Length: 289
Image 1 (tube, rainbow, N blue to C red):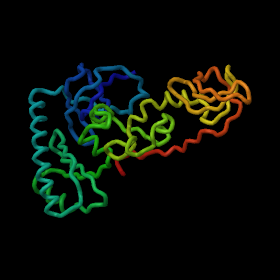
Image 2: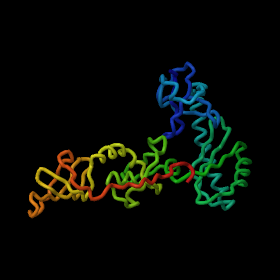
Image 3: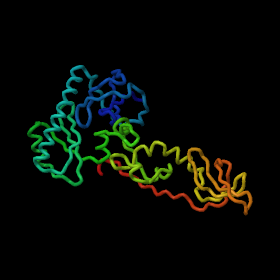
Image 4: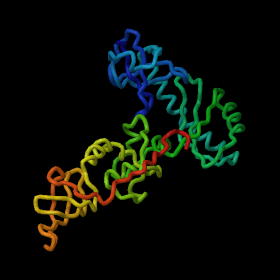
């Protein structure tokens, strides 16, 4: 077993593990840690916890120190510097006539690097822009092109459910989403109804997918011929969550059909007219669109 703490650098960012190095870190407190980008200021999401060594990637970097009041003030000043840098960069982009949309700016806690995130429909030659920004800020400059999902995560917004976007409030990582999930849940395949404001399939299609996959294993298909306590009939529709089918049933061959609902456990499929075919179409959720 190894002792770790979980640190997050953005509100809905990825959770990273660090070695507390003997320090007791409380959830909600702040810590100064070393990352691949340099020294960073993060929020402790998971306090001191013992986990199996196989659950973490070794070697773990150690926490430098608990954040002091001076560190808190420095972090607040960095947020103000980021706003200033955003405005300056937008002016430089317009000056060079570059076809790119600036989304966000980040400055590392130790001021070692300034990162500009942008979107563009094509490749952008920003070498001259980087030189000019480096001359203004006197630090390392990185311009990083991101995809539409990451743009929505950074900017936030209101989804069709009326709530703030999941990716911007609590989702640390994007999960692959496919059209199969919408089919499994009997949702409308109208793109405007199953797509988020980023234009991609909604992340929430993933939430209940495991449940629907398990329930659909027991469900027959529309058009199947079934045997019920009332006689033989044809399935007209199915309700996955209720585990029921709506069927037109005839008690005798020449009787008029009666429509009723039957639990899946109380029917037997006599003839399957068609099988369920779901072509999985995974959606790329990586940074490179």
